Image: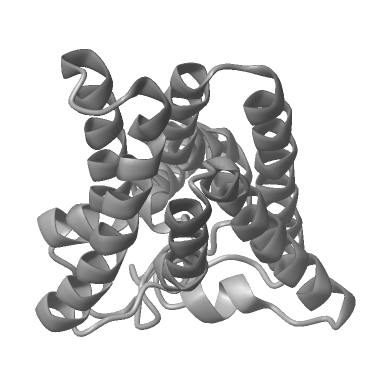
Amino acid sequence: MTDEPKLSDEIREGDQVVDRAMGIAAEKLGETNPELALKPGQPKQNTVKMAVDYGPLIAFGLTFFVCKIFKLVPAADCLIWASGVLGAASVLALIGGLIAEKRIAWIPLVSCLITIPMTILTVVFHDATFVKIKMTIVDVLIGGILLGALVLKKQPLKALLGDALKLKDSAWPRLTLYYALFYLAMAGVNEAIWRTQSDEFWLTWKLGSMIGGPILLSICLLPFLMKNMITEPESDAR
């Protein structure tokens, strides 16, 4: 009889630990994306962050489909016009994010630096190939940087996410590898799709993968994060 209260207390404590871990993991689910600000500890305005991260992409897609549906320009020029809008929107989003949130998101920054020359080449040469391979270049660059960091035993994700996501030291190399493989896979699929499918199909996939891809990855990583989450030690007196 004396063992039963102890057993129930242990079960209750175990349930509390699991609940707390799940709560932390769910809270940090949106924080596991390396597209975080360079200063992740600062509070972020969700609306502004979403506008900075996804505004240019949405403007790109809307411009293409509006031009296509309403035949505002010849069908072959829809992607050219959309590329120009993408370039302008990327610059505005980066500036807007810096002003509103005092942050520079590193992936939008890299994307913007590549988008500008690719947009210019697309418009000057009237060839949408440049804007199509931009996604490949960005993804390969990010994946390559992450793999290079692993070789050099550096932890860039820990530097970006460490204040918001408390993981065991052994988990950071694996998380870095998962993200590197994710971006390299995205690059490979992008190359396969734009070379074999129509502009409409490629753009639809681009919109879906760039918005839904990181979210799906975060969901898939949730069990890994929960397993390797560092929970705060119990402060209750024995």
